[in-house]
Every structure is written in structure tokens, then in C-alpha cells.
Image (tube, rainbow, N blue to C red; front, side):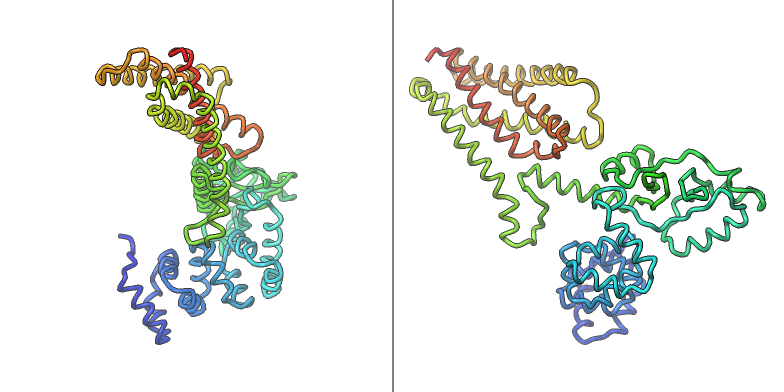
Length: 449
């Protein structure tokens, strides 16, 4: 049964902080998981949260800090001294420590690093900060267990015990040669059952999945998903083992990417949170709203070009929202499927095959909806020519919208642009314009005005 954070618990924590009941606070929280401590901290004010972080042992608060929302963590770090931050970093895995340092202003980051007593940690943090954030190098941690192929089983076990003291979870044992190049992995079963004097070179498994330090995060996630890996080693240009990316880090990366894509699909141009200030939220939303405005003005000009149609067949006006809505909906549906497929590397085959498939799907959907429109026209005593005009227009609009929704993300992806941009206002606005134009143009041809 999971631990639940109740209002009573939060009130009690707040009261103990107010009266500085440190012993009671430490006793109350001593057996609580760091993720639950992070949840408690997130319910406190900045002053209360800082007090709790300073009170509890860094071995626990370092983990809790990494569970907090980035903005709130940054605000807490602003309240801590450089020495206090350094104490937190010394209890973190290297990848988390590097992330925290990256969040600090440059001058303060240098002061924090200067407070670190562990020279190896300083070296590792600086190395990790040199990589792009969303690459395997930026995601990896330096903590791992590696053994050399020349060691005996007995020597290997002794060395593994020493290394494992600094590793939170031992997912895999990696084998390197004397130059540090990754050459395989070691089965724990084989290690335990082999004679003590055997050499690792005789029992290790040469086949091992790995990624390069500059491999994009999306590709790392794809490889780990495909092969059901809990961790994957990272190598440099020379094949030297540099670190490993663990499942918890890649899950966090996937979550962040999903949030960015969701916001982009909703027409938000940068990563923002609900608690951000008005200016930041406005900058994120306004660009796409401006695009939507120009798209709407474009539709107005198109309708003005068919003013005669609206004079003779004013009923067309009432069906304009229907056509625009169908165009936008079909475009978003098509683009969402393609963007998801690109993210999962499932979009295979030639563009011609994709074209034929989309046209086939569009024809089925368009004909079905068109028939429903004609039935609606019969029931409401609508002129049959007018009903056919609406139905044919809808069919054409659906085909065009599906093609735009399908191929725009593919083209953007080939150009190195995030295709998620195509699932929101970009597709909706462009399809609205094309849809209204096709609607009136087809109506002009069929109704003769």
C-alpha cells in the first residue's frame, strides 16, 4: 500500500516547522520515502521547504530535491549557501549533480563546484556539462560497475564490491579491455558459477547493446524500449566506456518530451508551467494565436472573393463552420498519428504507399460523411443539388486535409524540425484556409454562380 500525503500530515509538518520541533520532524519523516518527502516539500511554502531541506540529512534530501518541479527546486537552491548545495551534490548521482549545477547561474555554479571536496565528482560534473542536454552524454551517469577482461573471477568480485559502494543500482556488469573500450557484458550467474581462477575473458558475453555519447535522447529511448533494457552503456568515438543511461533517467526524458510535444500541439511555442508568470505564458502562447489570426483573416478574404455565392446561396454560409471543422479535425487526426509514428520510428515504406493509404482512408471517411449529409438534406427538404455540393466539398476537403496532415510532419521531420509542431494550430489554420477555398470553389462549379 502506497504512502498517502494527507492534509493532517501537512498541517502537522507546518506546525512543527513553526515551533522548530526538529527532533519530532526528523522522527516523523525518518521512514518516509524520498519521493513522499518531495511531495510534502511541494506542499510547503518556500521558507518552510528550505527549512526542511536544511534540517534533514543530505543523503535523503538530495534524492527529494530531484523529484521536485524544476522551478521550485531552483527557488529552494537560491535560499541555500554554496556549501549547502555542494553537500547535496555530493550525495547525488553524477547526472543529477550535473543537472543541478546546470540550473545555477554561471558565477554561482563555479562557487558551488569550488566547495566540492570530491575531485572525481568535480571532474565528472564538468565532463557531463560538456555534452548536449538531450543526448546520451547529457543523460548518462558515471556510476557503473565495470571489470577488465584480464581479471580473474576472484579479483573481479573484490573489485566489484569496491565499485558497487558508489552505485545505487547495479543493472549490469560491463567488460572493458585494458584501454577501457567496451567489449561485452558479464552475467552474474556465470560469474558466481565460474571457478575462482578463471579469467573474465573466458566467461563474458561479447554481445552488448550500447549508444554513443552524441546519440539523441529519442534514439536512446527507442533502443532501450526495443530491447527492454533497464540501463544502456554509453561510449565515446573510440568505443571507450563513458557511463550509462538508466531507465529512470530515460523515463524522465520521455515525460519531458511528451509535455513539450503536448504543449506544441496545443500551440504553445516554449516549455512553460501553469505557475509561470503572465509574461512567460504570453510569450509562449501569443505567436500561434497571431498565426491563427492571420489564418482567420485569410479565410475572410477568400469568402469575400465569393461574395456573389453568399448573395445567391446564402445557405452556404451556414455550412462554412462545418467544412472548416471537418478540415481541421481530419488534419489533426492524420498528423497526430504520423507524429506518434515518427516518434516511435514506426513510419516505414515509401511515400507513394503512404499516399495511396491516406487517399483510401480519406475516401472511405469522406464518402461515409457525405452520405450522412445527403440523408440530412433529404430529411430537411434541402435541394438535392445543394446537398450533393456539400457532400462533394466535404469529400475533397477531407482528402486534402488528410494529405496535409500526413505529409507536413514527414517533411518537417526530414528537415530536422520537430514534427509535433504540425499537430496543432499550424495544421488547423492551413486546413481551414484550404477547406473554405475548396468549399466555395466546388460550390461555384456545381451551383453555377
